[in-house]
Structures are given as C-alpha cells and as structure tokens.
Length: 228
Ligand code: 0O2
Image (cartoon, rainbow, N blue to C red; front, side, top):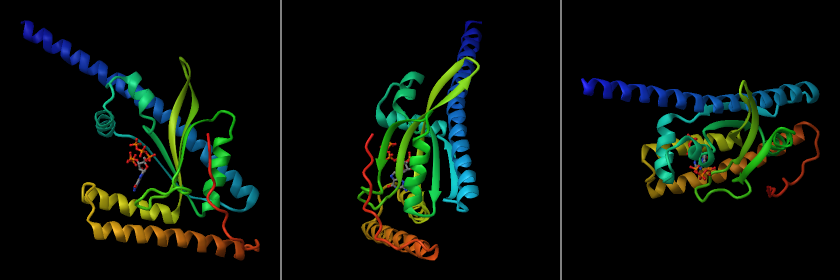
C-alpha cells in the first residue's frame, strides 16, 4: 500500500519537474524567436533598401536537455533552474552566416545597437581566432520577452560568421565528434591549413565583390576589437 503511494508521489514529482523544464525551455524558445525576427527584419530591410542581402543563412537551436545536463556536470554547477539560468547562457542559439567579414560586423552592429538589446558578452574569434583556427564572432545578448506574467530578459547566444568560416567549423565539428576530441596530429595540421585557406578565401572574395560593385578595392581593415 505505502509503496503504491510513494510511486504515485514520485510520478507526480517527475511530472512537475518535466513541466517546469518545459516552461524553462519555452522562455528560451521565445527569446530565440525574438532574435530570429530581428535578423529577418534586418535582412528584408537591407535587401529592399540597399538591393543587397548580407545574410546567407540563419540557423537556430535550443540546447537539448542532454546537452544542458552535460554542461551542468562539466561546469560543476548546481542543477537547479536559477543556477542554470545564471550560468548557462547558450541555451538559445542563433547562427547567422554572412557572405563577407564586413557583413559579419555590420550585422553585429545592427543587431546589438537596437534599444531593447543588451550585450552581456562578446568573444571575437575573428580578431583573435582559437588555436585550432576557429573563427566566428560570438555574442550573448539579452532580449525582452513579454509573457502573460510580465516581461523577462532572455539570453541568446548569437554567432556571426562567413560562409568559409561556417564550412570550416562544420567540418571541424564532425572530425572533433568522430575522434571524440582526440584529433590525430596530422588532421589538426590539415585543419589549421584549411582555416588559413578559408581566411584567404574570405579576403579574396570580399575584394572581388568590392571590385565587381565598383567599390574601390582596399586592403581589408585590420580585425576590430570590440569591447563591452
Ligand atoms: P553547440 O551544439 O554548437 O551549441 P562554453 O560555451 O562555456 O561551453 P566556450 O568555449 O566558453 O564554451 O564558448 P565559446 O567559445 O563561445 O564557444 C561555444 C560555441 O562556439 C560552441 O558551442 C560551438 O558552436 C562554437 N565553437 C567554439 N569553438 C569551436 C571550435 O573550435 N570548433 C567548432 N566547430 N565550433 C566551435 P557548443 O556548446 O560546443 O556546441
């Protein structure tokens, strides 16, 4: 008799936790949608007013429960909602792939200068690539989401990169996954060379684009340093 009631209580608690987790993730989904809308408006407005679309594609994702749990364990933080909310800021993620490096910074400025956007963090791996050659401009922004219970500020990680950077990162990610992080030395070297080739391609393509559009070719500006 008592076993049955304990089981029922355990089931009720598990269901309650599941509901709380779904509510928790929904906040991030709303935040992600706000950012997607902002990017989509910028893309449409840019296309109409400048006859040019600086965005190649946009991908969004909500971190899976398994990956959240794995990150909680890796960071050694308390597994409660408040701590996860404070410590894990990439639960909602939007990746914006642009044609050229100049577009990456232009889009970053256009998004982060909006009045309702607060920058929490910027990591400029274009100005300062990772040792393996990884390049992208990462930012954690907070956007307001208006719920029936009132407004909340939701953090969203936005990664900006060029097509060449994206191509490299997706291959590196697959290789990293295949070798579970222990990439053989010769592949590490090849990846570093490929990252250099991707950077060179970015410079050449942007120069070509400028020439084709009658913009005076110039040496590409040195990487910008963005401070928050
Ligand atoms: P997913 O599935 O893409 O979300 P942390 O966020 O604390 O774990 P860190 O290093 O402080 O780690 O964050 P950082 O540098 O902002 O990078 C986090 C994300 O950037 C990663 O997310 C990747 O998407 C991407 N990234 C960073 N470094 C590399 C790299 O060397 N290669 C590739 N392919 N991607 C990279 P997640 O959480 O790993 O995965």
